Amino acid sequence: MSKSKGISNPGIRRLPRYYRFLGELKKQGVERISSRELSALMNLTASQIRQDLNCFGGFGQQGYGYNVSGLYSEIGRILGADKSRGTIIIGAGNLGRAIAAHINFDTRGCRLIGVFDADRQLCGTLAGKTVIRHTDELEVFCNENKPEIAVLCIPKANTQEIADRLVSLGLKAFWNFSHYDLSIDHEDIAVENVHLGDSLLTLTYAAERLGTE
Amino acid sequence: MSKSKGISNPGIRRLPRYYRFLGELKKQGVERISSRELSALMNLTASQIRQDLNCFGGFGQQGYGYNVSGLYSEIGRILGADKSRGTIIIGAGNLGRAIAAHINFDTRGCRLIGVFDADRQLCGTLAGKTVIRHTDELEVFCNENKPEIAVLCIPKANTQEIADRLVSLGLKAFWNFSHYDLSIDHEDIAVENVHLGDSLLTLTYAAERLGTE
DNA sequence: TAGATTGTTAATCGATTAACAATC
DNA sequence: TAGATTGTTAATCGATTAACAATC
Image (cartoon, rainbow over all chains, first blue to last red; front, side, top):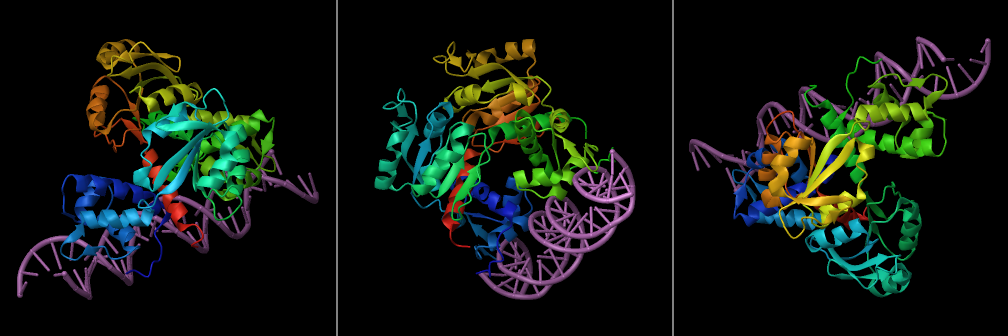
């Protein structure tokens, strides 16, 4: 066991990637892997991997390396992928429906239990395998089902308002796709802002500089 | 003018965010802003902002601050948002269609000129405002229209193969949504991997730790 | 001129890399 | 035991912050 100096911030964002690669290796039937082999695969340094992993405990074995399947489960546990937190999507436009259909919530510690939209036309139709409900039903639904995580696929203008309402309904974590930097003043609330537009602009910037260096 | 020590890597990823906030301020009719005011708005330090911006030139004025609209254009130019690079989407499933309909390519230096899918059932139908074509037409289409940027919304298994094919057709930049870490060995190719699953797991991790610290 | 705020250098902090003793 | 590879400390590198002279 480490005395847990804590993993670096960049390290935290590497954890899901470790998890993904280890899952792949496990699926391929690989039993053990050294930090060196994994570093080659993932384009990191072996040192970095050992530092990252050792923050959570000594998962490896000298002279052997890491047991793939064991490490996979450990990281899954660290990430909370073994949980099953009730999750709702707010906004059933193109993006909300794509996320409902496209994201595998279950393997990431989440269970999709509801999709909501303000447009009555959409209510009753399906987003993935989930029936779309009207946002008026949020209060009743949340009191009954106690979801913890909300995915926000709504226009910028409504985001803060809806988020505040959901906080008051007990939601604890927000995956925010609106073009708005959500930051919630309550402590004990987690927010992950996804700005696809920013990501595209980063690519544009890189394209702009190709062949320059 | 700076002698361009170069912006930090995290700094590069902050540029689109600066652009977004300045665009908002401009829309609100704000004329000037100091690094201090902007830092409060964006949750950064004033020093950081001055460092980031000064890498590209002295856009500010002592005693005054920055001209919002001028700085907005400068950053847009740096990012390449003023260009109009031909862009195609490969894969017209839920995600591909959501991106076609949801992302404003034009304001980010990209012009969506084609959407392709391997499923003939989809061909001829619309993704956003763009007709879906069969991937068999890629060669002819690319030779005629010379797209530079490809958005990959295809299954993991096909990603590397399709990417290689597109590289040989002259594509220069890849916005990759497949569950696969695309890395292209050719130099002079830019890749931006978007792993929505990793993003969700990061949120799960944060949710797991709420109230812990 | 006085006040404000940048541009820029120096100091600090944090993350990554290198090195190696511990140990399987 | 010999070889391999971790866990962990120390050295390096890079990014952020602080400070302040330049200047509008």
